[in-house]
Image 1 (cartoon, one colour):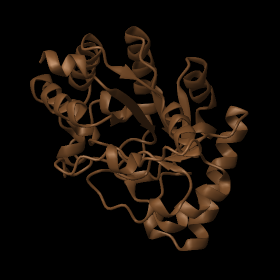
Image 2 (cartoon, one colour; image 1 turned 180 degrees about the vertical axis):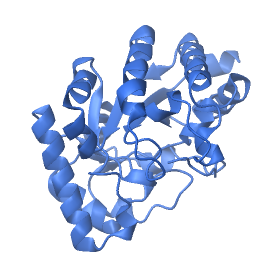
Image 3 (cartoon, rainbow, N blue to C red; image 1 turned 120 degrees about the vertical axis):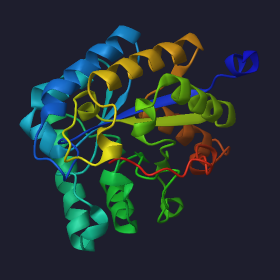
Image 4 (tube, one colour; image 1 turned 180 degrees about the horizontal axis):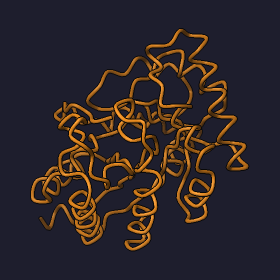
Length: 271
């Protein structure tokens, strides 16, 4: 345990802001009720996070999205309507990326620096579109899913390490799993959703509804306290991407796609 504390590495907490468990539900309780709760929890612990927001969310709830930025968190793009890009033709994929980027830029007054495809399902056409749009990093690849070829592009790829459902496990399990990740990886990227702190109905599949609501909030609260107690360094995704870009320009290129993956965690992701 002492060795783990001494070598504590970076963590990026990312939160995908979208309708409730898309496309299963057509409600917004996660944004309306869950997002303010999460923002208060992060303020309580002094943790900054990166919020990947769908353009539709930013258009319906502009005040909440601007609140994210005002409270010193990062706002990235999460597509337009949480569409599955791998089910669209190439022209539609490019158009959706373009529309989403413009919508979020209009609401925020500045362009987002990072992009995450819904369901962690990017394509080569999506990668090409976000590169044309000027994104400095992508966060669409997950360690437990196939990368369609992000290494072909110049943006920084920052893969997700664990599915969000892991953070809803009892802390006796989640803390051990995170300890393994942090001990092995220079960067651990965590994913979460505002709807997870709202109890999901029975029509939602089990992996997306177990331990949601007050249980999820309590466990996340305890987990953040635990990690901070072990001197975890929470960083924004744009900071990680900017540092990686500086290394590359300085001739010290290394691949975040390689160093932040954990092949041992091939879990089904609740998205």
